[in-house]
Image 1 (spheres, rainbow, N blue to C red):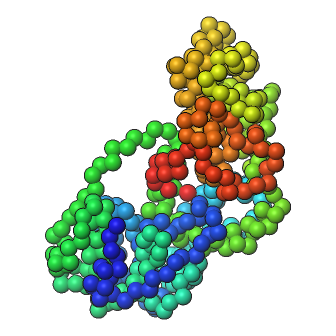
Image 2: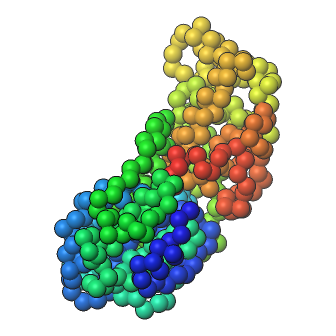
Image 3: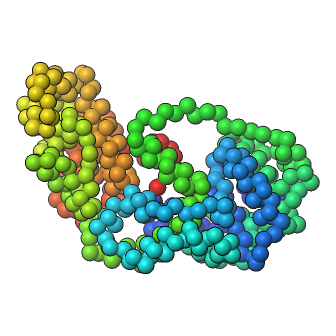
Length: 402
């Protein structure tokens, strides 16, 4: 971990350190994950912004080799359908009629923000929403670990001998990304020094990784940050009433005519699975107390019946062979279907909710698997209060990390 405070002091930069606003456990609304935001509350443009605009594409490219994301709001546009991101993190909002005025406000931000002076209000909203009470008017908001730093930048300290303070900060974060120590002696040769991250070589294995990448792209561009003050207002004004009037979790309903698996309290959100994987899920649905996978062969006839009802094919030999593979624990076929179910549900909602609908165990490697919500007698407890069981929180979304 780099010593960011020593860096700031080494360059003689004034800064305020503070602990940002806590979204009261709503992890999905944490938009401050390693942000480096330039803000300017002063009137008009200045030479700093002229330089940032001129080198904006280069800055984005250079920051892509760090663990931080650089955000300059006048260069971006808010995405028009951030509701989908909010629904992903809080699917119960699908059934709640949030004030149309609030949605309209969010959707028209794109046209409003064409006026650069408007960004002053956006900057104020962002700083106030995370609890900053200092008096720095122009600078960088840097989130690092559990703390935030508001660093004062002026035309007098921004430009170095042959580079800028942003180049120095870039070098600092590149050093961190590569596990190197920042060399203060190199401050006058910053533009000649380049570090690059090694390729991670991680394959996108399922759809949820694609969804996570899309969310990260939105965060990387700063669009989610631009929208968060409005989202925060919606949450603060409506969420308490939502959670009083509605249960946190939806029960599972199965339409045995269409074989659809529905979550009615999430506006009939459907868990879509292939025929055989759906049969596996329905097998656990019909056995709410769970199944010991070491004894899965005892459920061969039940699984055969379910699959025969769902699958439109008439080749009974293939059906029987598929059932044989699943109910033979040595083939480990059952684990592939459990993994597909997990990915499909995580494709619909964040982990805090999805963990109630996946097939899991009491601990990693537990052979006794079940659908958590099927074992619950009530649906009004918060999914945020339940402990993780079978999914690694750091890996389930290809962490990163809406």
